[in-house]
Image 1 (cartoon, helix red, strand yellow):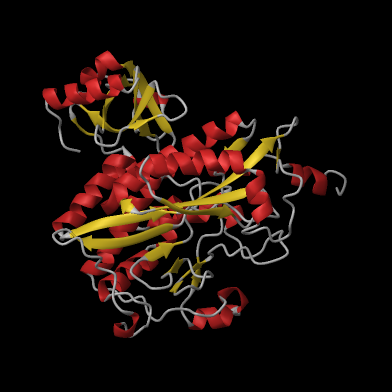
Image 2 (cartoon, rainbow, N blue to C red; image 1 turned 180 degrees about the vertical axis):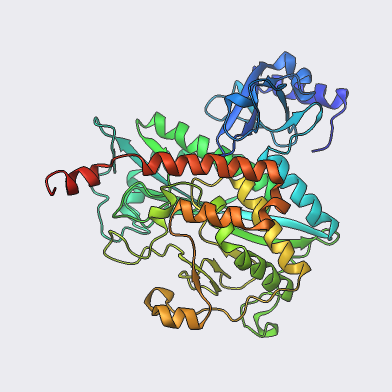
Length: 455
């Protein structure tokens, strides 16, 4: 983020005021990826731009502070301003945390910028696209969730045209706004579960994409409220339906030329996927640290209700449960989509803190390149149907099957400290272990139904 001069800030202030902006919201995220911030009147934008807004870090999750410590500040990124389409009096500005005037290492957006700088030092830029899946639901009187459209009840509702058109008002608001913001929405559809939709917009540099995904989650919820509904990116709202993914599509580009460093003619690729050696090395790094990465890609207790082969469903979920890669084969956690030129990590879900996950994914990929790692041959079979012995023979391991296993892998991998720093790594572990403990100590309706009259 380039520091703005006083004159540049004044020009931005005048432009926003002319557009009807009255207030500026500097929004950073906590360790869960949830936006936090303060609001200042437009007249005070110059002060905010210099870090005037202070925060008690102890009041927030994952900012590594005790109640006796000095406050942190946030500095808005004035290159990525969004005027709220549903509330044009407010300008949204992604922000970075600082402490005593320096970037704060517990800020996940700062962590991503630091990792991008390391990639830049190697001559690489990092492009990222995130496929946003979301449920549009109704809250029931008892606090549950239900699909609001009674006609959206096909066993396999993916791409269903009728169910899509039934929610056209909300979908049109989302699509119109995404394009008005310049994100280039190129496709959207009814997804694989009843009440579920996906929005696919053009990739960008990783920081921009993470900012956009963070804003998209807020926007989806606001437009849903206008329809008397709720939008949720919760990984698995229903046991018998597929969950919300947030697939990460990644590539590196040459800083000087802008050329995609992963792309080549499939005929020139001995493995036939249209990926360069650098691309395979990047994937090898992802696979090497796949179990640890899973904690960031799938960061909640609920995430691991999604990462199952079938569960309470009549057909395969297509959720990735194996630490493996292949071509268009969706039973791998990492795939190379048709035509190559990128890799897709499929275990990321709707609860992801995109800055944290992107930091770790980039760090793992860069390590794969530095060490010249080889991911082996692509897996083209339906891995769900292989026996344990067949998978073991190929060296294919399961990814963590619950949050506790994921955090164990995250904690055990020294790579995480190198990527995030000791403080941020420890904060993530602390909050996620507390989440697992709270879940594990909660008595569920399933337990009461199963055991109360059995014993």
